[in-house]
Amino acid sequence: MTDTELLSRFEYFGKKALEYRNKVIGLLPEVNRRKLYLQRGCTSVYEYAKKVAGLSEEQASRALHVFEKFTDKPTLKRLLEEGTVSVNKLSRVVSIATVENQEMLAEKVQIMSQSAIETFVRDIRQGASEAGIVRTHKPESNLLFTQEPHLDEDVREKLVKLERKGIDINQLLREALDRREKEITQAKDRVAVSLPEHSSRYIPTRVRSILKQEYGAKCAKNGCHKPSQNIHHMRRWALDGSHDPNFMAPLCREHHQIAHAIDVRVQEMRRN
Ligand SMILES: [Zn+2]
Ligand SMILES: [Zn+2]
Image 1 (cartoon, rainbow, N blue to C red):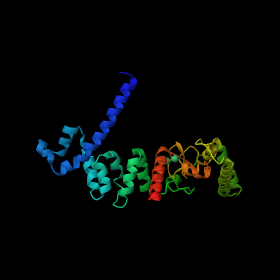
Image 2: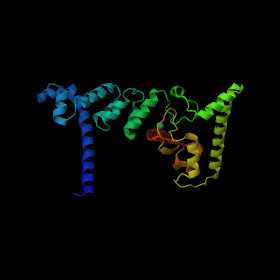
Image 3: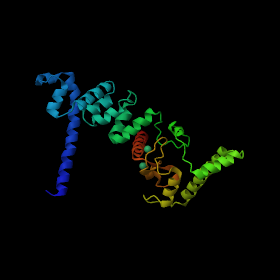
Image 4: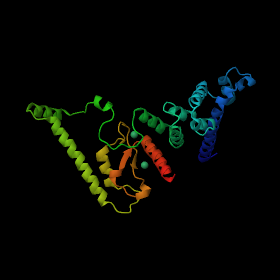
């Protein structure tokens, strides 16, 4: 067997194994409810699940727990019962699932990866809105205030000297920060007007570098400190085809997926 053949076989059966595991897990709660494991000489559903399907007790109890939480949420319950989505992913949304948001969550768990779901749930729980990337410079998280900025010795020394002279160093820094913000805004507008009307998918270097100046190397979502992985177009690129940096933001992998999951929903709402 060649390397390619071995890999493709492994991946084919691996995919099937995952699919079947989801299906078998989906049937388990009903087997449990009807106590059918007794008919097979098992004393508990866990023993039966292990014997027949090789499920660990943890997997089985997670399935039963999630099922119970979804009793009044038929849309989510169906995903578990039919094995459409893994119980691991579904268990991530249990804490925020409601009768009202079940449809929305059902859609998200089907298009987002497990790590994106985790981030999404964390954002919701932290009270971040579902509006996607909130473009505000106001800090949302108190975490920000517990971290002191690192100042080099010479900078600190100069600031102390100025303060001793009775100069308002906070005002000084505030002005410098405002100036930086204004410069970036102006530079973005200059870049925007310089862009060709019909651009290719390739994001021009000047667009990338102004975004880097604004956001640094991290995700643009407030409160997220992960490195940015993708530059996201907040207006659908396919609709206006422009790389206007005013409507772009570097995002981490998870927030990028979340932004697109929201995008899909907006598209669907428009269509309906
Ligand atoms: Zn994107
Ligand atoms: Zn992020």
